[in-house]
Image 1 (cartoon, helix red, strand yellow):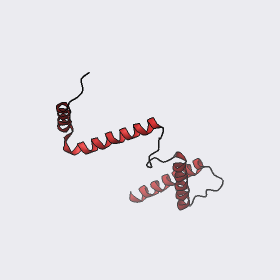
Image 2 (cartoon, rainbow, N blue to C red; image 1 turned 120 degrees about the vertical axis):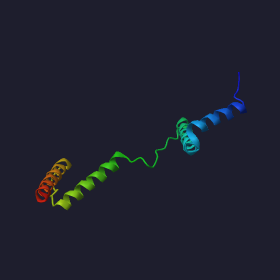
Image 3 (cartoon, rainbow, N blue to C red; image 1 turned 135 degrees about the horizontal axis):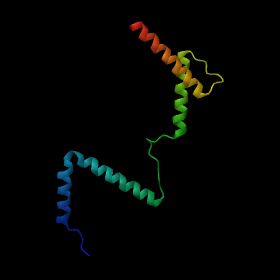
Image 4 (cartoon, rainbow, N blue to C red; image 1 turned 30 degrees about the vertical axis):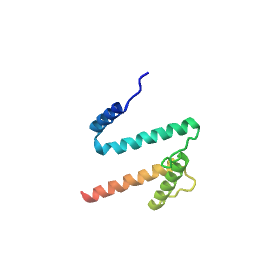
Length: 106
């Protein structure tokens, strides 16, 4: 069984350096390191979620708050209405205001 010697490793590294260039090499090494780290964690059962991922419940809450705030700013009453109804009213109000502004500019 043949093992890779130091000359073969040096040749491979030289080819990688030529292909990717010195600017991309650190990014490539970081991504390979992250992949190895994630593989080890997954094989040990220590899977963690990155902090950049947000759960859908948090996103929905933020969307709901934004929708309610927009409706309030436009003077739309939100009591007893579903989010879909509020969204449609915001769209209607937006269309009306665009029509008014386009008539003024003509």
